[in-house]
Image (tube, rainbow, N blue to C red; front, side, top):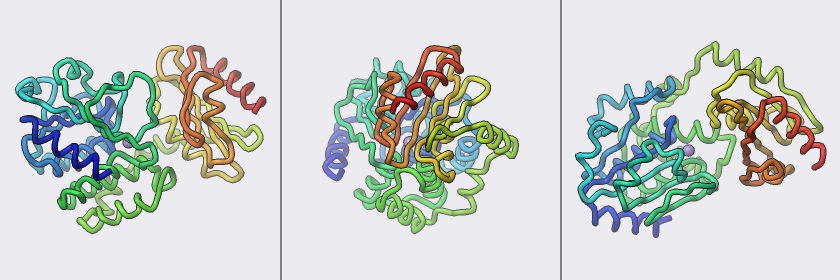
Length: 315
Ligand SMILES: [Mn+2]
């Protein structure tokens, strides 16, 4: 990792403007890791911020950041920063997920920092650090701050901590010794637990809806299946739901199905480790890791559910 940071700094030195960009539907790990990079780099660095719809937690985070004088840029003015630019992409590596895909035609030198399993349509990069064993992009970037011997203030540390918490689903998923150490370091920089809880608070209706969805879930052997009603789901919602299902007694693996867009069904699968969900998802045209996998099926949700059930009966 330090070798990557060394190369990153060499790359930064060669450029005049450094633009940090995350994924569409940015989340707290996306902004948390952007902030870590921003304060680690310090000079001539800009965060590309979306003005499109963001969730309530992100709204709260942006509100807090209003007092921090961060150099945010967006679609309307980023072209002013294209002189000798370096683009650092964080928390994603896929073209179709980039917040502003067109920027790839304008910036040649690209660095990627990510913690997702490498999938299709990967962005070409000059330098990258993609470690799917890391809990979050924020965890990787917190090491960059440490490498640079830099600290962030308590508000920034709080948002970064919230980013780690979101991506690990409350230190349940992909959490290692490093994750806890990183959290401890952010606490020592003054991360505020009450402020963090406020950022992460959810609406009561959303909680009730979630509970209803869980109520409708069912078991096949030691695997739990949850079929979501409605449509237009974000894949990350499906993933969090599957992670939540793993908390229940006797559940060894979990599968959440939801309509992402018209006739495009997403399935997110999670496992505690005894059931290989990568294998199951690859039967359905997807992929991933042993404990963490997904697929997309072009059909209606009931057909997708049947396909999943048939596959589960075979394994
Ligand atoms: Mn992330």
